[in-house]
Image 1 (cartoon, rainbow, N blue to C red):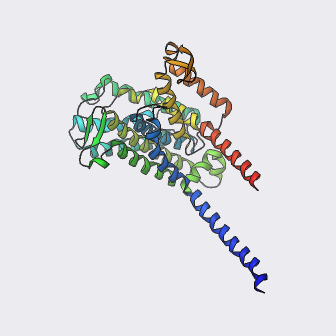
Image 2 (spheres, rainbow, N blue to C red; image 1 turned 180 degrees about the vertical axis):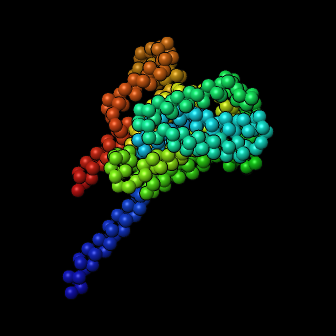
Image 3 (cartoon, rainbow, N blue to C red; image 1 turned 90 degrees about the horizontal axis):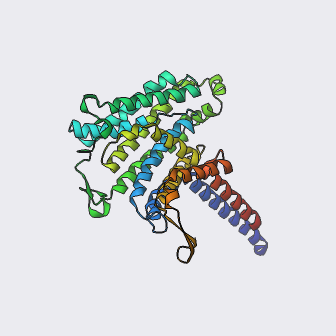
Length: 378
């Protein structure tokens, strides 16, 4: 009897074990976004600073700032279906809010940061109330027009606050940030924790995790429903205008937070931040990475900055390898037009993965490889 009972007991035990493993795997998979964000901030700087890649670590901080900005823009387009060509003004509100309050009014940094973010959120809310129901094309054109109007006002230097085309360069850093040979440190903290990158990474994580929670909430699901079929969502009783205005407000506020971080990173406020090229770069970065995915904008910013920096510094083409060159070609005269090379990469991505971008393309290939390996194993 004992001998006949062992197989059954072993089967039950094996089934329980498999169920536990599957449950644990499901739980880990449900938190893949937080794990991925933490892995990003931990490994981003070592990767970009490696001599075989970009070779310096300061660009990692700039990448995090732009990842937050493009993710804020993609909340509006990728998850709500509203295309904005004027999001640079919210980016600039955060930057100039800090710079004006500190340099002109001589008030603490926190006052400037809160002022910039609130101003962006209020403008986003009011502008949304005016234009969200004008139609997709008109919405895009009106955001572009308002953004250009704000650029013109800042360039006119009203009451000597904005500095005009010169921007604001003096007195824009709080006293608790010190700069030495281009590296910033946080003065009150001990040496092991005074890295400026850690501050930017912490703000990035808080904002991106908040965005993740927002998108997986009923509010976020409603935004996706509006993006997919707004007439059907309206027929189901959803106040689509209210949701789109709320999305615009949150997106503007997050973009301003990124602007605050950019001001701390650059140590100044530049008029170019309000320019149409800034908004255009955000659009292209998001599309390059994949607007339908949470990590799409993050991937697009990484590819954009990596390609820009690599193509700008690339001067000699050594074949087959740099360590064993048989043929050396000077390409510095060609790659000084680095945007042409980046445009070629963009066209290639659009041709290979028109809807999913780089992130969707890589994700699809990895999923197919995993399924093949799993099928072969079974």
